[in-house]
Length: 410
View 1 (cartoon, rainbow, N blue to C red):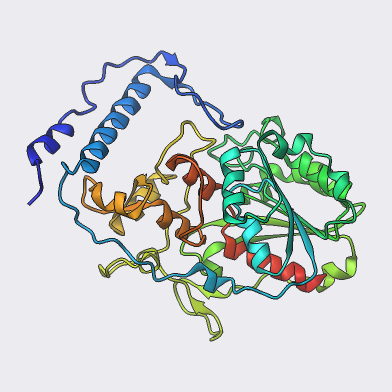
View 2 (cartoon, rainbow, N blue to C red):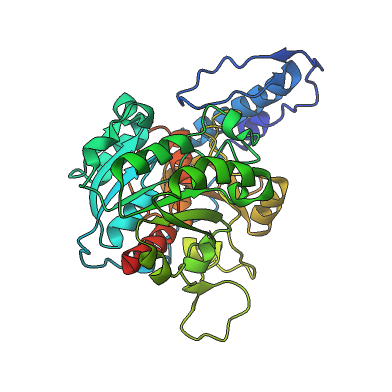
């Protein structure tokens, strides 16, 4: 039977219905640790609702950690998916890679597994840089102010790098980031272009949200990416879906791939799917992608599906430990009986903190796995920071597929 059910019920007795309506816009009192955080204008009523929700969750979590909450409903899960099986280590190719906007290391790990020699990473967020350094102590990692690409002297890498890769911040082009394009101070594509021109690598890979490949930003791409780089590079563009490469998540990304040598571009083939979700294709060599519950090692409830796209709250309206990005995503998680809010730091903590509806609560290792990271990848920082690094990252198996295709071409 649940322990202290009376107290637990009391924790959730307070509702949000008694919040006094106030349409006055008030600033957030919570300082941001992200240099690119763009606060959202919220009314006093909205902020009060968020405050009460946060307090309610905090009290429930404290109660759970003190052993005063309901008895756990779920056993600690043992995932069935091993992300390393999606990106088997390739022998050294002799190609050297440099990483910009490295974040938690999605592209970096994918290129490493594809046989590239890692030269250095540049990442402005100190916790993310610490993640890279902890994961790979022998890597050269420039973090914080030293990792700010706007200050970097890329000419020092000329002749030392074969492949430059990076995913400039996507917020200027995403719906969540208000799609302000070049008017957004977080637009770092000009810095990526500068790095390519100063380093003059054999090839480059730039990644972003699919919206950048849409009609709205067609002029931006033409004027700010293609035009300045086309004199020295032959550029192609491809949109890839993570589940096509075994990642149990709906996640599409656009990749700009440029080669200095035109023959390399002719030899380059965009990565072909290695997995499928849904109806099996005629090609018997393609494997079935695991659904979310199967990948996490959860009991069979008669339904499974891909995870909705994981969000990152680092540059959104406020820092959060929720990975929800839409109402549709919430409905899908409910169908899968998975609780995506208040992600816990560990599986033990997730098990102790029983969700209101009794669904399975996710942990950082679980979310990392959904994104295609090894579950022991050592994300540094508070829970929201770890989730931000995961949500911002390119799924490593997807990065691996792109890296292998580039390696074959050059």
